[in-house]
Image 1 (cartoon, helix red, strand yellow):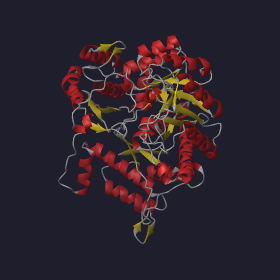
Image 2 (cartoon, rainbow, N blue to C red):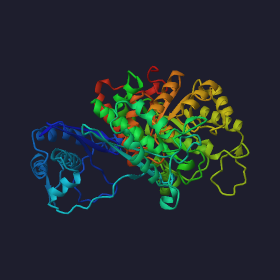
Image 3 (cartoon, rainbow, N blue to C red):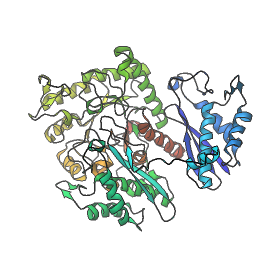
Image 4 (tube, rainbow, N blue to C red):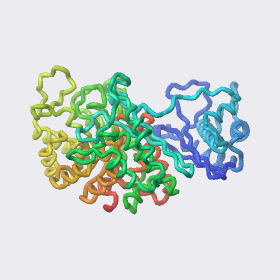
Length: 587
């Protein structure tokens, strides 16, 4: 029987509904919305006003929590038709010439609950959702989908590489699923990602890595305790794989994508077996006594390897450090994002609002300063000057040349080299940006082997500004150690797939924090819908997370998970805000 309902707003202007049954089942559902909607659709309830540009769903959320939810307590979720008719005919009751129009409570409110009830009905019935739906429809023939061993990731410029999905089942009946992303601009020092080569998927397939999980890693882990993350990770990395290079364990034999996917899945299973949320389990693994919600760094203008425009620098981000909660930060980010869209459309035309790999706009501009000017204008027009600041991911390794210069026109074929500049000139360009715009963070300002210029810019501006190492560090504890000694940067970009295990990632974060550095948890351009990153960021109190624009489902999935975590923490939720670089004491 239904025991409780809870609804709250998530990104993409929709609501999420949780259903709990008396037997302990919990399911979550959300319903989408359209851009080009028919005038005869059932009525979608929106808030109006200025928040979220009038597209908020607070009214619909209240209708679920105060009207629909209480009225469904005690009802059997397997009785889909009866529950749907009760909501539509009795609780709402509004009609027009075409039937029940849901004008009172909102089709988005009723629809989200209907989906959640359907999911709960499947779980209570002990059958897959598709079979439950077939039973509801009286459909005797079900066509099974292709098994999801290979998962398409979300980055078009990442080459449409396949990602890996791993399922872990425990002896107590726990089942978890995890997948790990891939990058477009990858550092040469990252752990080895195993790809098939050949013609299938343009050589980007992962059949070899999948076989390694199914035939080597999986059988070797049977009987092991998933709460023992460090022991399992070390067993996979040191014994099952065993390959090393000058920077440590490189995962060349089995693949960092194979080992990493299993590591994430084991971590999820450990949380379920321990009976605690994933972010708390991760905090326990790291010895972190205080969890913190991160400041989102929304990548709202895409360039470099993430877009087909002429912009050399890869990411232009906005960070709502002036928000009082993650929920408010999302509101600020969404409003600036859509204001930016209007600014770009007015200046460059509709085509300029196409998006890149990570959901940011990709106007065909070449001057990096022009990208910063667009952000400054959008922030001001949205009314958030002083509350929303700017970050950059330059990804300078992408335009570092063999003659030790940086080519700001590298995307132009047969260019004359007139925009090539030295490392010192590039450093001075950054300093001019810092003086003119509200920038707080610059990631990968130089090539991954240009330790000299990293150290120079950190020495000159690092007291006030964050210099983030991504390709420089690749989440590798040994490279983090070198950068700490040489004072090459003052922040770590955390990407689990770069190093290939949860344990090594935690080690890198702890080293960075103890050195007084900032930490930014990060997605990859070739992302999946997995939300592990959100829990990782909270559990390790990174204080910052970048997982794209508030656009594209594989990006929104992480932001929506953070909203759920904040909702779950309630009064205990702490948002990093202006303390994003040092949100908690080192652990």
